[in-house]
Image (cartoon, rainbow, N blue to C red; front, side, top):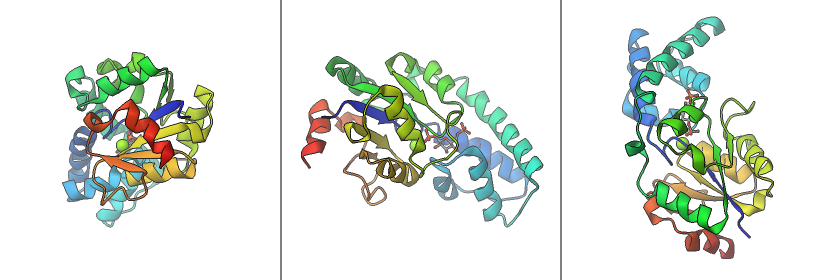
Length: 217
Ligand code: B16
Ligand code: MG
């Protein structure tokens, strides 16, 4: 039986990718690196410092560790300017109805995000009360595709991995779910999210019935 749903944050519950992109592009420009929206796809689901490494790779640059950490700080300060202005209107379509339906069924809900700003984003969008557990970038040593974030989520909820369904929009996140031995619903394009059990366009396509049907597959 499915007892819990574990949600990624960026790209599944809210679209903060646009704010990440804005802040990273500004930083890349200051380094003389041309960073495009296409390049930004590579940053989805990966940690802040890994994101900077990818941008430096694109620009063919390397920097000392200390300077990299300072740049990550700088990016995050820019990013937080936008995040601190977020409202519940930025919750993606179908999310709240699905979370309410899960609550009504007694299915547990956890967050499994790479972001160190996850708590703040949930607070700004009024999503926080839905969550029974929050595992984010502050709690994990190994980033996605390592299964740590979702395994810790299951543990916090007191359920087994095979009783969990993960919702993910990033390839690294889907791999993380599969490495954890969990069912996975992809949110986005089937051509990209090939390792999932099903793919939905967004949460408007999700119902509790569809969730339970995953097990029979
Ligand atoms: P922060 P998710 C991820 O969130 C984003 O997709 C990724 O682009 C970002 O680099 C990462 O969080 C870290 O975020 O800088 O706020 O700690 O998709 O795992 O919810
Ligand atoms: Mg994501």
